[in-house]
Image 1 (cartoon, rainbow, N blue to C red):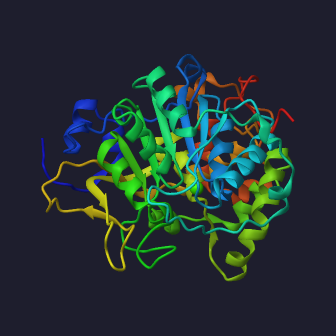
Image 2 (image 1 turned 90 degrees about the vertical axis):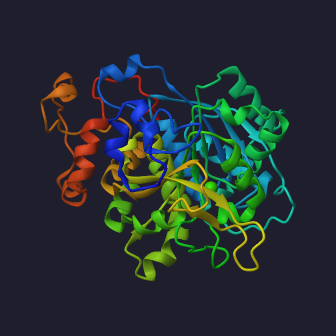
Length: 409
Ligand SMILES: [Ca+2]
């Protein structure tokens, strides 16, 4: 077993036996089960669904992660737990309910969680705009149990089975860990959107928003949870959804697409006007790689922690790339993404059953019948081949009982 961090091709990881995966890291707990979730063919329906807890601070990006998880037939959302972050926790709860209502999935249990960071010095960042965020919701459906208690209960009910997708300040997870010190080691995987690897900040010069908002919680989680994959902020900055794709995504003609359009258009406008090359949804990207690990083009196992006391750097994620601290690796850092595959997954979000041509007839593809409809020529000219290829893998035209948020309404 090697003791140094090094670049590894994610395909080498996901295609390797678990023992080899562990050898690629030095984590004492190992970075177990890096196999991608199989999305393809009828065979996928015979697999148990991926049990997921989403920890959110909804949040425009969070809404994309939620909608993507809802759209995928192989995901079972056990809980959405809300934390103070983008906005105060009560508004996070309301916004989460708005997303679920738009998708016709108010049956998903929502839990109210941390009101403030562990030290109480939380700052909020995002001001929402967009008509989708002003609709009335019934907050009486919110679960009475606290989010941290719900996390503990669910993980203990399904030890080793639950994938936690953390796309908010990590306060709820840290609280859960302090209430039950075993939960961090009972998860299947933990995916975190947060932290930074190039010291590029968002709310401070050096710190990413989620880690900055609760550095102590981030440190607890990085130290005490296992099987952590981190999607850092700068990586999300580098991989953008082109605006012509954005236009298709937000005008797909389904209720889900309409909700996204009404929720993002206003906030996306300044970046577009300013000439940025595309749109990004950090939390949506994070959910995409949960659903399909081949979205990750490269990743590196490292030891990562959080600066708590720096005069200017509080909340910055510190990555020991060269193993100078002699600590075992505790996280897999995502470094490159396949934005084409992400586009395919994002289309799944708005048109779960949109038929596309089966372009290859081998392997799993051979089990799918040819489709009658195709992408419109206008769309095919815009969507990159990587998106079309990935979509061909994703869409199952036999499946009429898909957990469809677009086609069912
Ligand atoms: Ca978020």
